[in-house]
Image: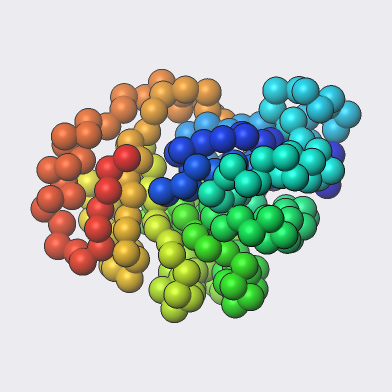
Length: 244
Ligand code: SF4
């Protein structure tokens, strides 16, 4: 199991679940290799010692310690945000969602949108209350993020299927794009308008320098937020664009 079955818990956050005071869990393991990824420890957890102790900084939980945490704190929380890595790949995801249901906590899931078959199972069973889907760049450039699928597994096919699923699901959701030149610039954003057209919200997150999976991406120039606002003001789309 990725990370020896251990994962990360942030006990309280106002940032990860729109409109709610939530706890956040981060499940290790990912099938992408975004060079700007700020969670390299979650991408390649095999590099992490599976015998980490419970008070280690990153993977500070196992399932039983998380259960104890919720038994004490669930009544103070408005929801549980589940992120990664790619959370849909993690074998503990069903148990963590079931535990949240036990404590009547709404669940928000973050995903990169390349696993529509798995996402569909959760959406159809009504187990997700909110989905945030990362749309990283135009589908033709996903090979730059390590995606090797082609044909029915091409990024284009999978992303369009996920977008359709979300639009039909009745579940609240948003699309998020990290604006990180040169992977995402004005032309790329413009080319993503049609893909995002069915979404209620499209959140643009300006890249921030920091610890990144590829160290060469750790200190790029951050995009100017006023410039992003100018770009979004010029787009003709029904989708609400939020810069956050
Ligand atoms: S940014 Fe997300 S999808 Fe990309 S490598 Fe990191 S955890 Fe995986």
